[in-house]
Amino acid sequence: MTPLPSAQQLRYLITLAELRHFGRAAQACAVTQSTLSAGILALERQLDIQLLDRNVGKRVVFTPIGDEVAARARFALEALQAVQDVADASRAPMTGLLRIGVIPTIGPFVVPGLVARLRRHFPQIRLSVNEDLTGNVLDKLALGRLDLVLLAMPCPCEGAEMLPLWRDEFMLVLPANHPLTALESIPVERIAGERMVLLEDGHCLRDQTLALCRQDRGWTSTEGEEEFVVTSLYTLVEMVADGLGIALLPRLAVESGILRDLPVVMRPVTGCQAWRTIGLGWRARSPRAGDFRLLAPHVRPPGLEAPVVE
Image 1 (tube, helix red, strand yellow):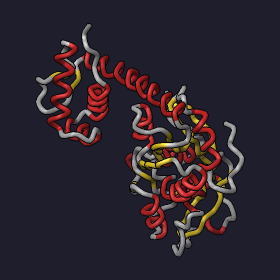
Image 2 (cartoon, rainbow, N blue to C red):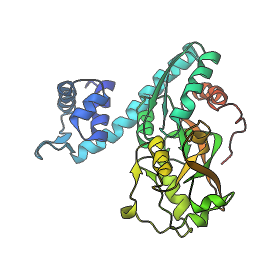
Image 3 (spheres, one colour):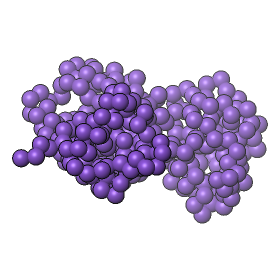
Image 4 (cartoon, helix red, strand yellow):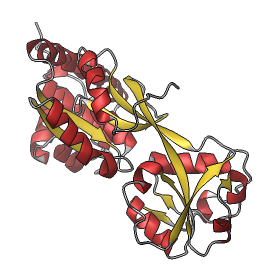
């Protein structure tokens, strides 16, 4: 009988297919580039097919059969991870390593309290927290590199089961001398024509801000006119304080003190559904789903007890 590919070989292949770069794929797999390259070559010999087109210079280009094998390898690796999950859940529920992925617009404001609560209620759990963009944490979840993800919903969560935990309102943050500060609340239509400071591509908060402002609201800015795009909420609020635009911030960030001592004013937005839903996710059909549901009340910050029903 022909030997089957190993889990490590499948992981190398899937990661290379995702990143299309040998160096970054090797780093993601915590191996040297030569080790990853040798693993791919060994897999090609074992399967007796060519997975990569090596006649295109330094670019990583998969052959058609290589793309198909990589797609099937993802499902195979998920199935292998499910086998391990079953064993872990039956042997010692609520113990061992728990790997949590969280996005940057949630992590700084939730993770410290979350870690403290989980350690208090589940002292046998060892925690690992990975902060990354939405697409990346979902990829890591699918590949078995994460057990749980804490995300803003809705999100492209195919293959994951999401449990809504709480609603996080958006607040409009303006420079202290902005004319709109005269209003106690800001109708969303009044945002039309204002310069918005946005997070860079890949942040779901950026997409949510654009959707809220553009959908039937008369906001006319185009992608090419977005002058100020930043990588963190901390930079975003500093730019608002300097009068370079206005921004939508989640209440989660505001209540953490991110605006402290800055010359800015915060106002609620009316006339639209100005909030995001924070949800906890895990691989669909995970045998540890029962454990994860038990964790959910401790993931939710105190004072936000009612789960959101979408």
